[in-house]
Image 1 (tube, rainbow, N blue to C red):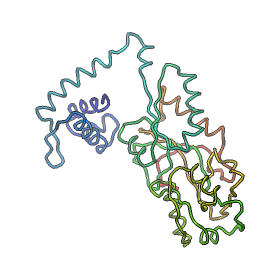
Image 2: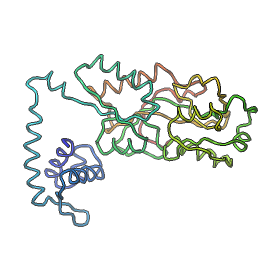
Image 3: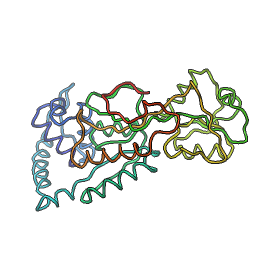
Image 4: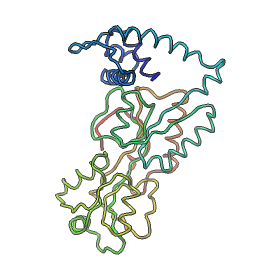
Length: 311
């Protein structure tokens, strides 16, 4: 709630949600979302809303005074610099495949260099985590690159360029991916995720009709279902899947290969500094050390760039 109270103070000082957002580096929508969340947690309305304007009501002014005092006390916690640093917590969002290996390596390296800092990893799908970064709920997130341009105040760093493969049970013969997809049951990558939407777009563009038998988001579970002969699947070859299980076979899509970009997103147009910057560096180093999966192009090498269309 501290973050929301600070935003409330900014709104009171600047006069509008838009002006407050510009002052503290949030979009107007993110400020509005934080204020609605604060009202929900407190159990009463803070603003009189008319059209696009919002003014503090009587309870809002009373809460503002209490918030100002509380934030002042919060800033005085700890009697020296080391204690103040110990209270710092970094909130990182991460999709499941990122948490499995590389994020753990990055966190281990980070805590060796910054033992007084704390981290909290929050799981979720890419869209949810992107919204939480935009709203200021979390400091950064490792997600799949969305199929749309990011807000100008969000910064994207590409970590990996992962090719999709057709995964089939080893006993299934043939290498014609279109024919195989048409003839066998299909284990679908959940369409609510950015990666699943890429699969759906690929199938529609290729005019391939599949027989869905199961749909889920967890990549390891998808691989396990293929290994058990339930069906076949289009999945990205992640760093943890450089070697597939012995009971499955990966078919290269050749010139039809499409990719899933994994990256780090955070608010602000400039590189992160302090502990957040150190953690960003360790996350990038973990992906760079592992390298991109076999078969990716030179574009898969880590790069920092301005927001643009998704892959």
